[in-house]
Length: 185
Image 1 (cartoon, rainbow, N blue to C red):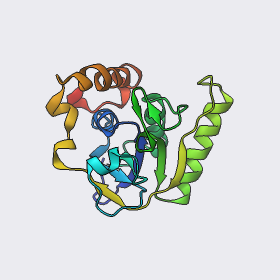
Image 2: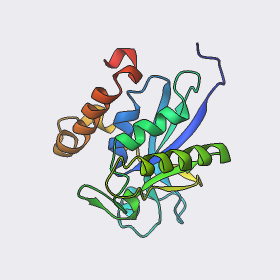
Image 3: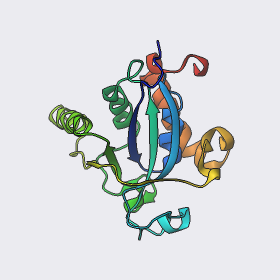
Image 4: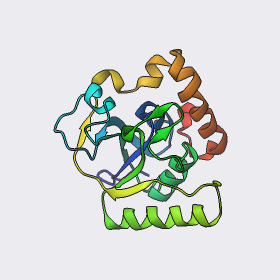
């Protein structure tokens, strides 16, 4: 049962924000997913500026969730399963610091949880290479331009969505069917 005001925030970067957004929009207990830019130097950056790789921002998603429905730990499990956290500043053909893998934390508890989970994944050799995901406090988050919001749902037949985003969505549905929002099954 949702208790009004019982919300938390997670900010995650795992390559193109369209991919992260599309996956987390399906998670039961996630209330909003906003694509944007986090932890860079420039105020109010544009997509073009962030894509230049000179602003220091990462394409990220700010996720508002109900922790009584889905825990922060479960969000991290989904996050790490939905991208390759072992490639520095790259996801597939998307390369540059703006595509880095990062957990931008909102509390010391989130930071500790993320570091512990990464250590467990490294110890279990979930990937053959070590995880390079940055764990750092969330700084200013700038919501991306309107056309980036709800991108996959509005542009699913676009080639990037069909070949890059859709496989991540399908993987989520296969691995985390029990975490899916009822209307999206």
